[in-house]
Image 1: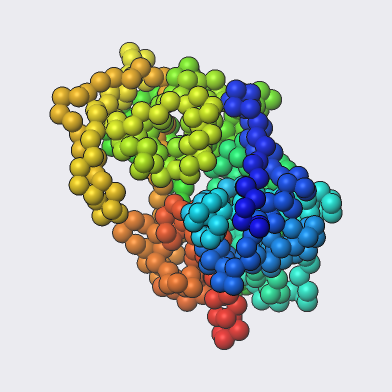
Image 2 (image 1 turned 90 degrees about the vertical axis):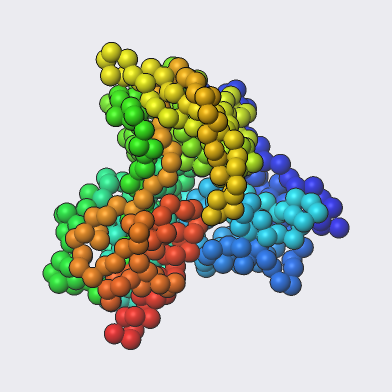
Length: 464
């Protein structure tokens, strides 16, 4: 029976080797491995995996095609719902979404849906020598829609609108498109010049134009896009790139970074490469404060830059919000985890550089609003960790620039744009989705929001 076949393992770089390079950690499946893994699918009458996917990829259908060896058919099936399959197959938290809902996971291991999606996308690109799942939009150019931000929400929204025949232009503030996919996710998890570029090119192949180095709210305003450029609807997918800090003494010392800056300088500005003139000094020892996926990315990046790296987290490992796979990889590579520990001060030397981080031990008290037990300081338990660099990975908030320069847009207490389930904001014609609305979340949730907004924009313009 299919469910008796054990989950096919994925080949990976040796931890001792990959800890010193920025090459991709996972090698992915080959054709025979993919077909064997796909054969494990039970093809449920009520596929919970589809319900668990924010973009509702027809998972049983594409998995069945993989099992039959019809990889091109599988790619076409995924492309019906996802514009970034090679990205999603690598970075989505499948364990809490599609795979987390797989019925096989109740008594065994779920089907490796993410790894199969990655295989299909990579195989299609290798065979075609072109962007995976690309298609040319039919019909002449019609009504114009502007997309602000080229991250996962913006790309997903743009792709769906282009397929519907709209004239779509993406405006990106940075010099390369991709948003958090480009600046936030390390090379060893998502190769930029191969995988990400290919996915973005597949969106361009639909007829979408991308203009970089355009800061909407500074270079041009949304009102000017409407009044002078002729756009009839705007989607705001600007993400959440405003870093948070703890507000403790010493955070202004040289050697303290936000994870956002640290990762941006390494990913977008290639600080890890000797042939780029934008280096970053990590030093011999780094402490990363936080326990999410961004903290894991920052810690694993610092390790590859040659630093002994420690993750400091105020709860226990049970409460770590990062993906289990990322924590597992970090430990394999030699990163140290100090649980139930919280910084209270960053200590500097006479030159204004970080020399140590003063911490206090914590214990878990009563559950907080989210149901997690609240960490409580242990009186008199302060101690110091000698360190050269501290990276704060405490989450991010939406940038307020769009709301400040656009009349009629309401924001939430946390700075996100107010939008309904379909992405409509408080100003007609302006839609929003992804981290710009919810705050920092996942790539696939942002894509789901982008697709919902595309459908809402289509409906809005047809009824305008």
